[in-house]
Length: 329
Image 1 (tube, helix red, strand yellow):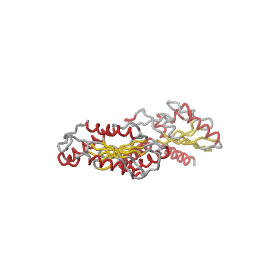
Image 2 (tube, helix red, strand yellow; image 1 turned 30 degrees about the vertical axis):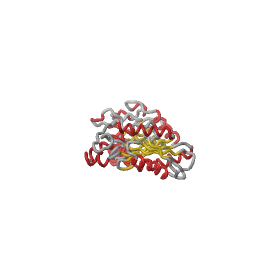
Image 3 (cartoon, one colour; image 1 turned 120 degrees about the vertical axis):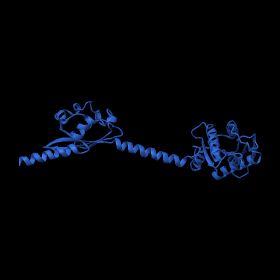
Image 4 (cartoon, one colour; image 1 turned 60 degrees about the vertical axis):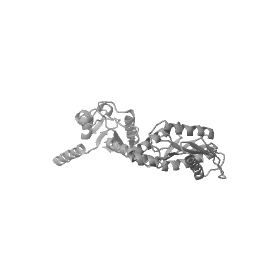
């Protein structure tokens, strides 16, 4: 009978030492009664050196205060405790023993459970390596952020796309109405761009689009300012809390930023270089506003700029009654 019990005990020890989870049992005095193979491997401390020791003295470095406190709470109150991995990444001196990661603590998930052994309350400590799951979470988070960026960013120029603009334009306009603050919209189009593609090819055309988008974006100063590719060679900019006078100066700033790129364009009628036309309008914020009407006003202003000779900016005042007055700069 004793041989059977001995064989059963050996089998249990073999199982406990083979599983891929760290197991420690401490009694009411926090002395170690079980220290399995997984803990041996990652602590570097054999069970013969750990059994009978105080849990605080068993590792090569002191456990965290939160870990020791959790053991006391589990034993004293008989309630399970889980140490949050977000707050307690590596409370125990457990290391990845792979050659590449020598000396690097593994990130741990630890749960403590009260158990009864021979009528006395003990604490069962289960430790798992959460490094892999944390890496997986980071990868998924990064992947999610990339997908979000792809959904809101123009793949060629790196600025926002029309979908992003449409969503944020409505929110910005609603905020302008609530706070009675102005909002200026700029529609920008590259002059003679079809001819540019015909002469220099689409690769050169893409480079020109990127250069223009970058130059325009550099003119933005506030996080609330938005630039987006509206389609083809057309861009749209939204600047909250910008009055008409400031908008006029900003439109000229945009035009000169592209002019100063000096991108050669032999088919352009304007000094043989790439230029832009700009149409813009400002919502005063003192009345309700139809977002389509405001965009339409800026688009009509752009049409007037094109028709008036290009390489210029035209302002059309937004009127709820649709009466619009043009100013050409």
